[in-house]
Image (cartoon, rainbow, N blue to C red; front, side, top):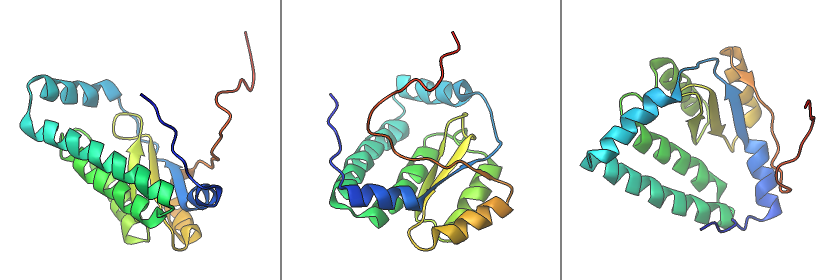
Length: 162
């Protein structure tokens, strides 16, 4: 079942302002990572199952943090989630990704995660204190920022080429 998250507009605006998204330039097949996770679940690997339950708990707590407008707690939970997820498989992340993540954490990010591309793709971080400083530092590392906004109207066709 799906239940909408009830987030105050002020919180949404702050979340947009303090969440940074960068393309890492790192790509690999997600099936490489996902097949490893699937196999561990099918074999009822206790560590993986425990970590999936932790991720579920973090998801519920994250929802509560967002609804309460506690974005710093949200940011720290991103970090908790990322660390639990990495513990599921040594294929989740790459050394370069880890270096970028730790650099962001050492320069003001409260937490973050890698989105897409089998452990590469995009680095998303949450930084409540001086996100523009972190934004500039990550650009200096050669990352390309992807600006975004939340949309509440669902999917729209921007262009139809067919």
